Image (cartoon, rainbow, N blue to C red; front, side):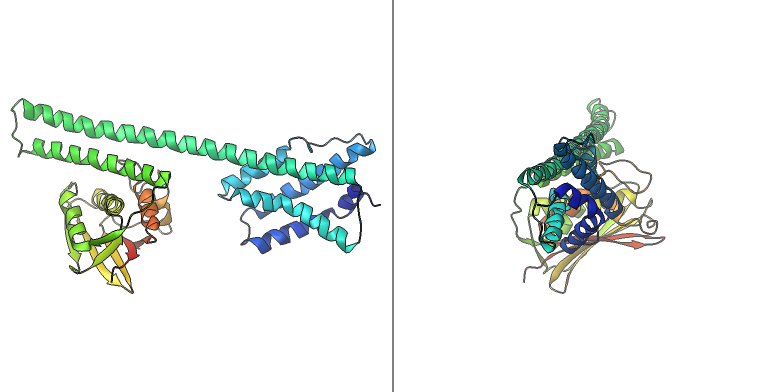
Length: 356
């Protein structure tokens, strides 16, 4: 009967290479391959040292106890946005590789060594997954804290503006049709928008089902036009096919599109113009919102959809608008994209199923 420890030690490089080949067959090219390759090599060595314990050797190993290398592997996978299934695949491939090579050589191993070997792998996988979830929870808690803090800050600013204007109006110093009345109206509208955006994010995170039904695009876009908060002389117009119908959850879609419209107004140049268009394109309904923000630096389009990343120097807003908007559109089975118009602005396009 062969020694499992000696077999793994002698075939270390073959086992590692076979693990990586199996991983490549199961998924696209690995973004973390160099780091994964290093982790696997160390874990294989830790298993060899653990198997040596029963032979009375003095070598020590983190396995079958907790392995810092396995924990680091879980941290790497979480940072790359991979799933826990990837971790099980990575480390489980060690067992597959050993079994395949041993089978080719028609070798069998002692029950005690096999038991220690399996215990090492179970512990490594468990340690990596535990670290993965620890980091994931920490990231979620940080994002939640940041989100709530920014929401509170924006609500306080909008409320302060509305209260100041209300105080002036209450004293009779200005009438409701004055600029002060306009400030009050914008402040209240801003509060409503912030609350709507926060509710949209909560609804998406809670996984609430999207209830779709036919919506007239013409009525929806003109509703957005009427409710938009104007500022700095930015004007807004609508160009829509009056017969066009969308298949969507009206509340979700209205809030998502409102985010796009307010972003367009906020980042457009002073006195600029924002256009909302809606038309049928190849079996889909496409809504476009074009602004005059001056365009984006090359290659920065996708960064706009990352939470808390905002374009321009204007930091008002949660930095969540485009992130939750894309998620809301995708919940409908649709798609949100942006086209950069260098020197002029951007076009945000929402593609949804068309009602025929």
